[in-house]
Structures are given as C-alpha cells and as structure tokens.
Length: 144
Image 1 (cartoon, rainbow, N blue to C red):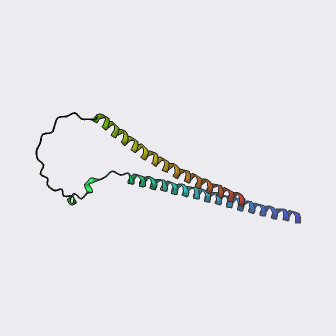
Image 2: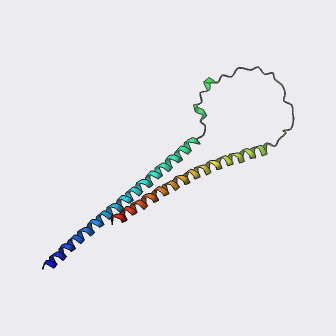
Image 3: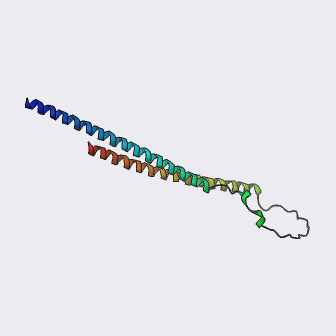
C-alpha cells in the first residue's frame, strides 16, 4: 500500500510541475508577443515621425508670411527708350524643357531619399523584432 501512496504522490507532483511549466511557458509566450507588438508599434511611430519630419522639411515656400514692409525700393527715374528689335539668341522652349527636367530630377531625388530612410527604419525594426523574439523564445525554452 505504501507503493500506491508513493505513486499517487509522485503523479500529483508531476502533474503540478507540468501545470506550472505550462503556465510559465504560456506567460513567457504572451510576454514575448506583447513585447513584439509594442516594438512594432514603436517602430511604426518612428517611421511616421521620420516621414513627417521629411515632409515638413520639403514644404513649399509660403510668401504670404513674408513681411514686405521691410523691403523699400527707391524710386528710380528711368528714361523712356525703344527696345531694339532682335532675335533671341537661345531657344526658350529648350530652356523650359531643361527647367522641367531639372525639377523632375530634384523630386526624384527626394522620393529616393524618403524611400531609403523608410527602408532603413524598417530594417532596424525587423532586426530589433527578430532579436527580441529570439531572446523570448530562448527564455521560454529555458523555462521548459
């Protein structure tokens, strides 16, 4: 009868240990998921902040806020004369085309810079998330 009592006690202890291990493992897994979720949220916030900073840096110049009272031009007396008739030495259409192409190149450079910043932020976020997940899994495995 002593063996039966010993086996029952051993089974109860084994069940309690198994239940405790299961509880600790689920708690660690839940903690790891919470950390991963928090890190992903923080990385998204950082990406938004970087994007907003870049967007505010590239704002258009607002001349309506310029204090024009500080600029006083002197009155000039210019004699009247007739403009001579001559041909333009350059092609204005080519000049306009060049200016448009330069604007497209500038905008393209800005877009590439924003994409590279976004890629860098996402890369750092992935590395941080992967490291935290790996460490959390290692901790969960160590507890088991």
